[in-house]
Amino acid sequence: TSNLTLFLLSLISGLCNGAGIIVAQCFGAEDYQRMRKAVTAVIWVAGTLTVLVAMIGANYNQFFLKLLSVPEDVIGYSAEYLQILYIFVAGSVVYNGASAILRSFGDSRTPLYALVLGSVLNIVLDLLLILQFHMGVRGVACATVIAQHVSAIFCVFHLVRKRKEFRLNGLEKKPDQEMVK
Image 1 (tube, rainbow, N blue to C red):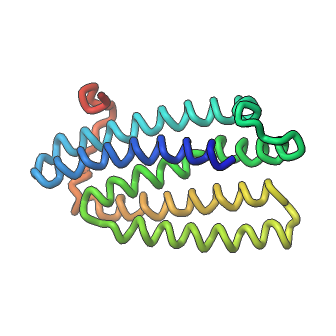
Image 2: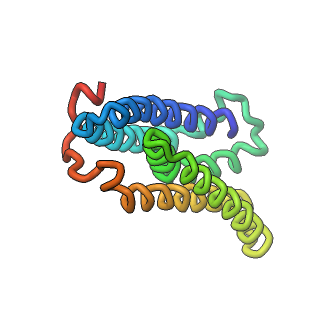
């Protein structure tokens, strides 16, 4: 599954980091109105991407695994793992988007703390769900998804808490088409 999850994460991370550059430029230039438009565009584009990736990944993961010549004896486990990851991909998208925005404001510590928290939680949940609850591959996937969502919530909570300092009050409801492009 590593090729498919790497593809997913690279797509999301690249989009969010690219958008973070625009947000950072606006923040540095003190063009807060344009910056808020950029953040709104990131939210809308990432949201749309989340829905598309979830639908495609959840419905076609077995097809992609067969294209990658995954052996028949593990394809079921791989498909089950990917199914859960793709259905709950929002945690990964939100973490990547929120952490890119935080880094664009000069805060690289919060995304790092969120990543460390998520990693430790993932390990603890892996052990708990596999050894204690005997969930196997489903447990590994659930642990990953929960850890990603906790990291995302950590970053979003920090953004909301610091929204005045970051000049994020008054985000647009609809995205500016130029910013989306």
